[in-house]
Each structure stands twice: as structure tokens, then as C-alpha cells.
Length: 565
Image 1 (cartoon, one colour):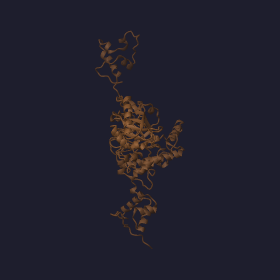
Image 2 (tube, one colour):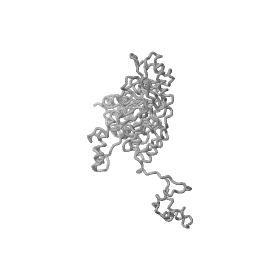
Image 3 (cartoon, rainbow, N blue to C red):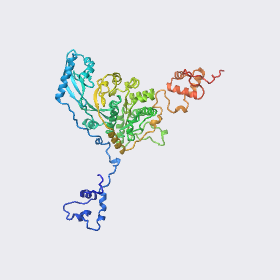
Image 4 (spheres, rainbow, N blue to C red):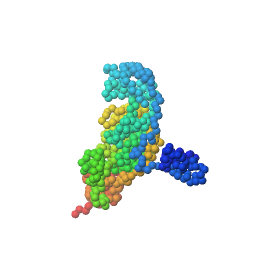
């Protein structure tokens, strides 16, 4: 109930309900029954009778978190504007005949057998004459675009389930696909999984809703202005309309410090939005350690994935006999018995500009991401990687092999399209959310018109979640203190430089005797990783056993050789 202004006269019904008065028709004198001030203005005690009137309309207050719905209402989003530029059947028929005529100009005989208008493009399905190769139409794409006065023409060589070729032409006036209209569909409401994500609408205007758990990781690419960042926001928001912090937690890495910082403070975050790339590497290393811990838990519980683990934990809680942590050790706390197990949430790692991270941190991040992508699906950890530079030095073969689900917005060249999708086509997209979605195990991408969400809508949803709780950050995520589970093979823990490596004495004896102070020799001798061997050599340098590396990279052994008896 909104607060009333001082000048407004309170309605009788409101006051009656607020003060428990009766308004039955059987009351003979309403003035005596209610003692309302405006019915007894001639009495001297009228001001005193007015005292109970004020509480009838208390000022509007923020509802406590316990009274709020588990997730925000969809009404926070702007309602979609009605479509105003529908193409008439006569216009579609005219364009179809024009397409046939222009193809005939290039000696290609084809008939338009189907027309599918959508919000952004219209697909014409062509039945080619016998002996006409699809590659001939593909090579004519630019000439057809010029002949039809179109921005671009995309040729769909294979339409699953049909013997036709698709020709996609942009509409003269494109419509905007709003997030609200996709979320309001039955497809989104019927999906019960907390990792349900909205992408947009397909070429026919049908909603495209996917499940991140089945992907289980996604690679997003697109040039500046292609709609990539809006697409990432749409994916995050759609999960925020489905999942509570008990079901999904986020780690957001934002090198640009602009796109994801708006989500700072929502209760889903495991740590603050990460903008420092050294801390980002620590966050990924923590994810690896958490993945290994979850695998040990699931192995001890005899389950195969996170869903089975949570179901078993919930059954025990419902039975009044919660399960105890099988990995607990008495030295970890002052408690005498292991703590009870709780349900584990999904963890979604969102990296907005992956190329920046690769440039700053490099190979180490690539290996961490590959390790997460290989094994983290059953542990409930998922990656969303976005980049505006889909080159082979950013999207390496190691990353592509482990992230089969791809999403490409408009890119600048066929080479970039092949890098992200393994086929061309993304260079012909129209921008502003137009994308090709390639799910895992499918070689034919689906054209999707990405949903649009404005900044003020994002702020509304973030504010609604802040009302529902505060984030519970885990400080170890950014500190790099993850134990040995999160380390790559041959890698020592961060900050271990102050303590000598356990192989240090043996390595010193080897270097002093062999008179070879190189990292590679220590690495080969003790069969350890390069990083660990380099750290041992650095410790020797700090203690004056070997000299700093010279201009040619060689080090001189300063310690005297061992005395021979």
C-alpha cells in the first residue's frame, strides 16, 4: 500500500480495514459506530478522535527478504514493443520471383518452394535443378547480394531433413527481439534446470532456450558492436531468473572492468568481480582445486555427478540423518566430529574478454581452462568464455578441442569464422545480436537473433537480488592458496618461494658436481616440471650458488666443487 499525501482525504474503507471497524448496513448511526472526525466536526474532542487515523496508511517500506519471492519477477524487464513492420505475402512473393530471376541470370535454375519470414531475416528455400551444385550458389553469394540490393546474403548449404538449399536475406526493417518476450514463453517456464539460458529467437521467430549443463561449456566470439557483451548479459540474466544462490554461484572475470562489474554485490558471487589477471589465474586454479575436491566427495559417496550427489545429501537431510564429510581431517579444525554435508551449487565461470587474459597470463591460463573443460562437467563447473579476437593464438587447439559448443556473432573475416565455428558464414551476419549457434555434436550451426536487454533492466534485476541477500565471498579464491589439488603437474604452490623446495639440497649437489646450472638439466635429472625446476634455480641464485642468467641465458656455477678425498 502506498503512502497517502497529507492533503488527501483517507477513504473510509481503508480506515475501517486498518482499524478493525465495522461498516455493516445494520449500524444505525455511522458516526457513533466509527467515530470518524469528518462526521463529528462540531464536537470538541474531534482532534483527539483523529489520532487513530494516521496508522491507516503507513509509509511504504522495503519488504524483508523473507517475504520476497525466491527469484525476481519477470515484470522487472521492459515489455516488448509490438511488431510494426510485418512483410506482406505479396511482397514475399515478389522477392521470391526476383530471387529466381537473379539466379537465372547466373545460369542457375532453381525454384523457391518455401518462404520463412522472421524478425530480422527471411529464409527462401530453393529446389535446385538436377545437376546444379550447391557450391555454385555459395560462390555467387556476393553477386546475389549486389543484385538484390541486400547488405549480405547467407547461403545455407544443408537444411536438416530437407532436400533444399537456404538463402537468407535481411529484412528491410529489422525487429528487435526483447529478453522479456523470450522469458515469457512456455519453453522457458517449463524448464526447471537452474542453468537454463535464453539466446533469442530463430529465423522463424521461435524462442531458442538452451541448458548450460548439457553444453557444458561455451565459447563466444564477435567483433566490437556485434552484440557479444549483450549476449553474455542475456545469458547471465536468464540464469538469475531461474536460480537461487544455493543452486548456482558465479565467478566473473572482467578485464575491461566495464561489462560485468554491474553484477558486483549479488548473492550469487563466490568472489568479487575479478579485474586483475593475476587474480584471475588464481580463481581458475581454485576452480581446479574445487573440481578435484568434488570428485573425491562423489567418489566417496558412490555417485557419478553433482545431481546424484545433491539427491543423496537431500535424502539424508530429509531422513534426519545428515551425511558427514568423508574427507574431513581432525587437524583441520577444533571440532571433534566431521561436519555435515550440504548440497553443492553449480559454479559458472564467466570470462568477458578472454584474449586479454591470454596476453597477460598466457600458457598457464590455457592449461587451467583445458583442465576444467576436460573434467568439470560432472562436478558442476561450467565455463562461458567470450572474446572479440577469435584468432588461433587466443582460441587455441587445446581450448577448441575441449569446448565443443560455440557461439559466433559477426566477425570480420572468413578466417575468424573458421577459427570459431570451423566453417565460414559468421562474416555474413548482420551484427546487433545476429549469431550462429553451434551446439556440441552438431556440424550445422543454427542462426539465432540474440535477445536484447538494456542497462537499466540489468540494474533492476541486480537491485532485486541485492534485496534478497548479501554475497558470501570465499577469500581463498583470489589469494592463490588452493593447496596441491589446483596445481598443474610440476607446479609448486604460489608464495612457496620463501620455503626451499624439498629437492633443493639434492639439486644443489647435482649442480655443484656437474657444474651445469641450467633449468633443463635439473628438470631432466629429477623428472620434474619446468616451472618447479626454474624455481629451484632461482632459489640457488638467491643463495649465491649460481650466477644470474647472462645475455645468452647461461648461468655460471659460483659454489666451489665438492672436495674429493
